[in-house]
Amino acid sequence: MLVSLQKNWFLIGIVVVISLARLAPFIGAKGGFLKPEITVKYVAVSAIFFNSGLSLKTEELRSAFSNVRLHIFVQSFTLIFVPGLVSVLVRILEFTNINEWLLKGLLIVGCMPPPVSSAVILTKAVGGNEAAAIFNSAFGSFLGIFGTPFLLLIFFGSSSSVPFLTILTQLSITVVFPLLAGQLLRQYVKDWMEATKPPFGTISSCVLLLIIYTTFCDTFSQKSNEIGSLDLVFVVCLIVLLQSCLLLLTFSLATMKKSLFTPADTVAIMFCSTHKSLTLGIPMLKIVFAGHGYLSLISIPLLIYHPVQILLGGLLVPTVKAWMVSTEQKGKETLNAAV
Image 1 (cartoon, rainbow, N blue to C red):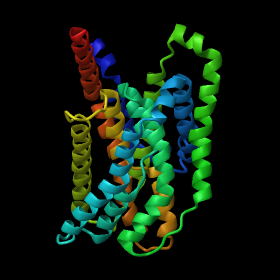
Image 2: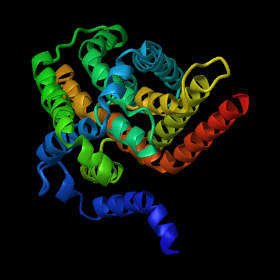
Image 3: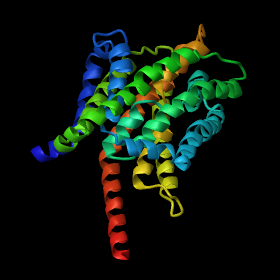
């Protein structure tokens, strides 16, 4: 029993933090006691990338830069395929009685860039290609600063302005600088780390639990009296189904017989290609739709999508990790037999 609890502590932790968030959402909601707009947005995200910079071998990071095929797959899937797919889905759903502003919000979610934290943490938790996840999360967020307004212009037919300097500054503070600082410090403590094996994966998982907690606190604190409960339930189910299909599709494409992606690459592809950024998304929404009477309704799909992607990813960690280890082991056995 104790062994089982220890093995599945992360899944148990997810249930616990979501339950706590439901009981008292004001604690971890924006402006609450934990001040997630500072502790999560800056401190937690910075800690993630400092931890990644410290644990990541420099040669692996260099190798990730040259993995052009993987980068093209992730960015094309995120900023071209997903927006197109969601656009078709929304056009079909327009013939139903679903609230039109929720559908517009769903379309906006499809246009959002990948996040700079959850995809990296989940990839690291599984043991996938963390370097590729870091590169694509950061690069995808940078592309999203320009790509998302362009996509909104195409789908909504109106121009939008985004505070490029503000978002670039935030990315530098929470991603680039901590990552470089971790890499710099690694040069001095590399021998010590190889001898002691610090629990970097456990640390990242704990940070992810904090992010899950504050995200659900924000979600549970949102009051949506303007929307029918059936519409809300439908959107939640639709988002869960959409994410599940996208995860399955990316996994299938990355593991095709002619695919040259490794199991570790596949893990990074799954999470980076299907996740959408709440950190960049909400500020963009507030600027693009400033003063809009239906801003709260438009925001709901993104507020739902974010915790669902973390929850689904967290639930998949043990399964995907077992698959990756098994596949890599079979590959080594095949190689040894050939030799």
